[in-house]
Length: 175
Figure 1 (spheres, rainbow, N blue to C red):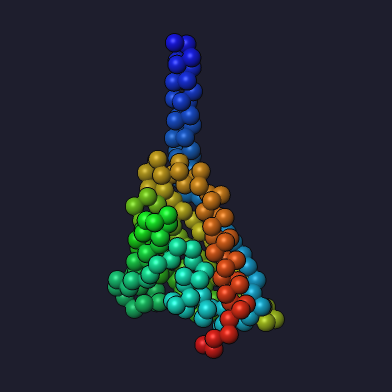
Figure 2 (figure 1 turned 30 degrees about the horizontal axis):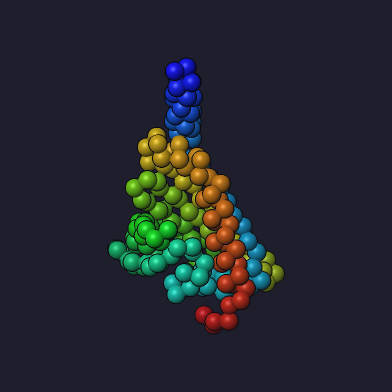
């Protein structure tokens, strides 16, 4: 019987620690950076090419405009992402856009909200592309989950950026 009490006490303590993560972690931020051997205009065009999104965004299924002029500030779209056989619809709102320089978006879904910003900085024929993401869980449980998932989300962004780098460097399309 003492063993059951110890197990219950340990489980209770783990739940409290987990929930405290949500109290102290309001949001997480992570960045990823690549350098491509192409000018910013070409790198931007490849990144913006909807037909190429499945080649660098893991799980991308489709992009569905909802309101506004697609690709402009204020435009709202539903982005369909597949993960382990389940398709999630994420609401995307473009918040900032300066062609060949900056693209920023807010993403909203039930468990969390994300602010994403990608910058392009050209230097002598190469372009540094940097992404910055701030993610906030909706509710204490999801804030706790987001704090635990930070490493996985950062790793996924690094993978996506690596695929974008390869796609841009191998691009032969003329835009």
